Image (tube, rainbow, N blue to C red; front, top):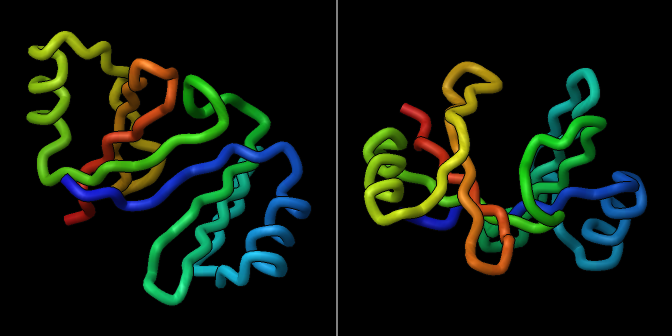
Length: 118
């Protein structure tokens, strides 16, 4: 596994965007706007990413901070975690090639387990 990026659920996309871009100096890597959903991936000079999400629906459980771990085989990782007693969320596939599920750490931090794109 590797940490792919950190996610922050935001109330005000414009204010958050200005903070991370204008104040902290991150650059836009990509942006996705769909009905009721706005995602902005920002990166630093080393390619470290932060994802800002503004959504009219609750797309993750837990609080407003989380991070994403990428794995080669999402189904195998889900079974492994369940075998260890970890409660896993449902499998989600919001777009072609995007497959993930959520778990929470003991502090309520949301962790998205995402399969690497093939």
